[in-house]
Length: 279
Figure (tube, one colour):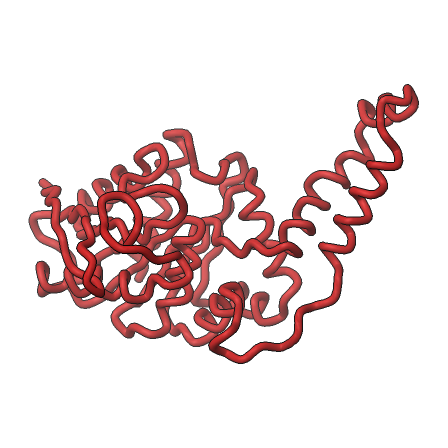
């Protein structure tokens, strides 16, 4: 049996709303779902609800909460500044379940990015489950768009037929192609002070300092996942993290960004549960 309990707690003067899923006998490891993007604690297609109940059904207490400024919570913040919200959520979970010692952060998209930024600063966090982490920049978007759009176009019979029939504006097409090339492979930005680093660099630095285990799950049919994969392949430090013994990578080839089918959601839930049991 499991229990779903609405709770509220405070973070920097704001009241945050959450749901705590509790099994009869909770394990000493619990999961905090970090919500990101334009959604709240239910998740797209009720993914967070279903995941939390699934994990609680196997002994893992799970907290899913609205950070400041989304859903039913007060205040305002962004995914780049969720450290206080995550810390408050972990503290509230442990206050209500004192036997919980270890925390796993589970996040999708910029919820995953926020977890990566936070984890190294909290020794209670022993695990990360990261789905399609958000690393969007002008360059990552352009590179992924180039590989996902222009390359297949060159091998498209439909495109060449339209070109030969004069249905493609050559001048506009070339201009668009060149703009994409400049954005994708243009010069890097100047080096910045640590406090001014873009969130992508803070994600990397956070993961380099993090000593726990990670499960990375990517969707095969998602631009965000493709951007993250591209960033990893181009950066030596990211590649070292990818091949670390403490990180497991999985790809759900047919899935979209939000794992919109029951089969995809179930697969993610089962991968998460299996990985939790290996901690």
